[in-house]
Image 1 (cartoon, rainbow, N blue to C red):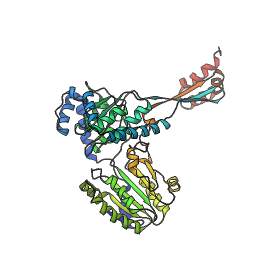
Image 2: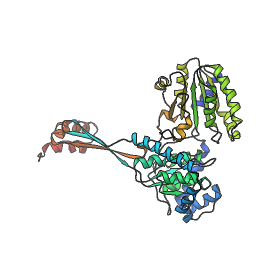
Image 3: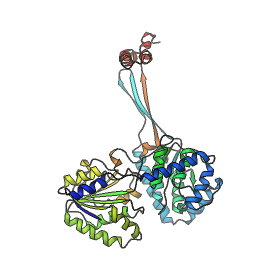
Image 4: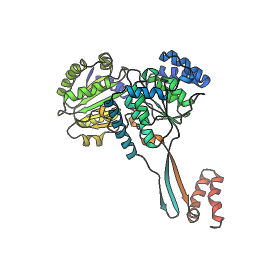
Length: 430
């Protein structure tokens, strides 16, 4: 735990670590590159090797895909209340996805000139569902569920063999996943991105993962589309003296329990007294949780309690940090939200825990981390759509604007471009 006061030399030193946190360590990229090249070269044979090496399972290519019988059996194991929770969360996330879907349009913007956009679903999407420390059932909903709501009808999911929890399989079926592969980590992502004899290549890969999966997605970008390069989970809580320390401590702990030890939980407050009370609550509550060892790893290196002189400075710290998750425990959260430079998602007020966003609120929980919210968005409906511009000119319009085309063609030494505009002036309208 690091207790810091804005403006001190110690804060300036630690701020560099806060603002310049990497999505993954350099060694992850080297390891990922070796696995990707092996999958590219050896296809299914490489997948078989890595499944045994990393996940301890002996698979033949025919075993990669989870069968319908396995999914049926999993559904029977799941408690009815869990099924209802999955279906309700999926309904709410899909509803938000449909509300935010961009729609095709066209409009006459000048006499004789019509422009617009066309949006069409991707043909085939791959979703990666991590499961190293726990089955991330909600990630199925926040990736595949949104892809299906966007109109994608071929959705392949990859997840480690040890992560095939009944709830995960049930959620995949409910969310519209058409193929499930028991393949994890870099080799699972590479299989989807590159394709093998057994697995058909996808157009785009989405979903979070560990440092190696994140590095693999970055390396595969170009051969396949990706959503974003996302690192360990993080939360920043901005609070004033009116905030409830028990709620804040609970929310800081919600990210610290993820398990890698690289997560960050940050409190920025205008009240030193509140910070003291949150620290005490954090210590009390962590002892009641099952993942104490994981939490204490984060507490040692990734728990920052920062005192700011006023709300404006606190907001500047939050916006510069650009957290994956930002909670506003202040008197007027809407007003503060308007002034925040960047965040993956903002949770307004004391009754809006980040975990509501993780599971059932509506927007996807796959969000930019490591400060990349300054540059990137999280998963949205548009993630799964192709955008195509539409342009139509009438004879009169191209005649009128052909001189502009000619001038630009001449300025850029592109004579054929110029002629493609001027040649139409000599044509009959009919």
